[in-house]
Length: 165
Figure 1 (cartoon, rainbow, N blue to C red):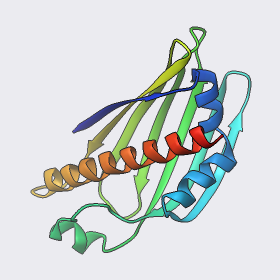
Figure 2 (figure 1 turned 30 degrees about the horizontal axis):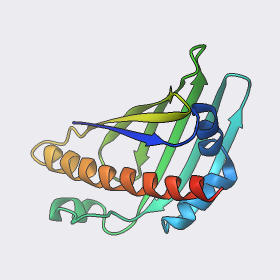
Figure 3 (figure 1 turned 135 degrees about the vertical axis):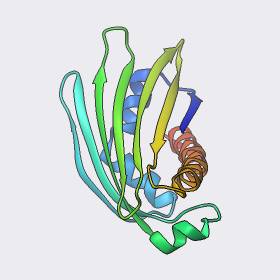
């Protein structure tokens, strides 16, 4: 299962990237979202590549299927690793992986920040695989729905934080 979204921002690709790759902005965004136990384990950038690693406790936003409640009741610890690079065309590209501790699913995706005149657009894709017999599709569908809700919430918070600066 795959999710694809595109979110426009009223700032340049460089400014959007600098906002997203700033540890204080990462913390402010997650505090605004009500995330618990956020740990920014790494936020390092060299001239053209870098990594963000974070761990946080997340609460599902939708109605969790009963089969998943039995596997993972309540809050889930999430580990995310983002590997970024800047291309010569001005785009910023990221391959990322998400681990939901205790949930039998594999989440991998990409993000691309593209210049759009004086603004920019971030394209996010997330692939979700769950190879558990009989219930894997139900788990993947729930994760996809919940991920879309979380992506939209993060977009709204990022927009408000960017406009406040």
